[in-house]
Length: 485
Image 1 (cartoon, rainbow, N blue to C red):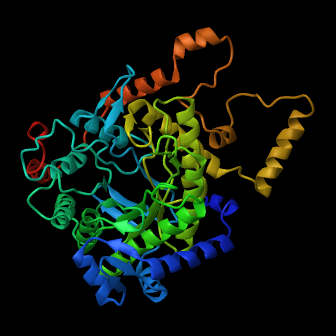
Image 2 (image 1 turned 180 degrees about the vertical axis):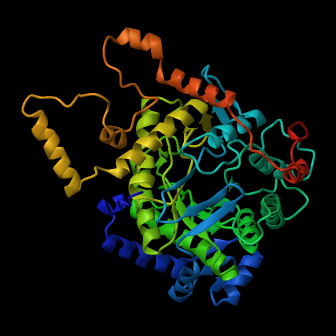
Image 3 (image 1 turned 60 degrees about the horizontal axis):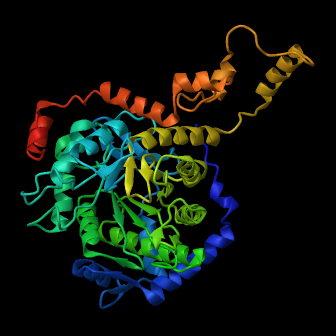
């Protein structure tokens, strides 16, 4: 059983949520949100929203109408089965997304290449704590970029190397030349439908980030509308920065984020009532010394807990929590920050986590070793969420154990008991050994060395999905030449 601890309620009360909601409504109705897309503006006009230029103002009635059709939970179906998303289920996860550079075992940074993207897909495919795969590095320099669409080849590689469902990235005007981005998004959805031969249900999930403050670019809107028309779910998120693209006060950031996300959700429901949508944010504070995003700061955790509380108030699936850090390497800072920010997801709990493993320096760097270390953080938090099993029947048994051992006795006898194996998480990565330190270090090495060995073992033992001949033929239409079957 996966318990819902509602961790956020220790920080954001029901009354707090009502205040945040009240002022979000004022922002929606009095300030509005910019939508840089004529088609989107026409949809809002048709349904009674106030449209002034590219600014859309939404009243409470229209918002409630949209929220009434947005599902509380939904399912992504692939050939490997069903992935359920919603409060009843444990958080679903996907690894690092989009870092332009990678940190390698020899402590060098370099631009990611196609092989790096493939290696990360394999890591996600073989992970016991990652539910979706995606292209960790995309539009890499060694892709063939002479063709009009070099986005679909990257999409196809996810399907080649993993049978887990895919968390998609939005197409952009650089990698889908010669056609509208809305059509590009529809083409992606159709590829997945054809590959799985599933035409009437969600088959992938895609991230769509608003433009703070209070706006949506035409690129993101085209992707949202294309996917929604194909009845595919989208995650509407903000990534605002306090005192830069959001108010300095955390409350102001939360209100602005909430209004922006709700406006995007309204659009999805006006277009296709009942289409699945996830409410999400990775908004974080700004480090004013460097004017950079600080995803590992405690304020990022507080913003995400507030967003989690609001999403639960609206009864929407919610994305929060990342294994986020601003550190340049997988060091003490990286571990502390990643554990703290990821807590929302597992102790909260939210429904979806992008970047659950492998990210460094505010999304700018990917690391194979940190991916493995972050997997362990995910496992530790899942164990924390389980809590202690306390019940009267077990109390009677442990009392008899205590009585049998008596004062100054012990509990070691024969094989390790079932209760120990059931209730203790036995780490395979972190050190738990005691004794003379140097021989232990000589034997097991540094934690980063241990993580690198796990990465290599998983690459050596990776097994590709068993695809049908028809599926291979479909992918061959899109895969890069050196990746074709």
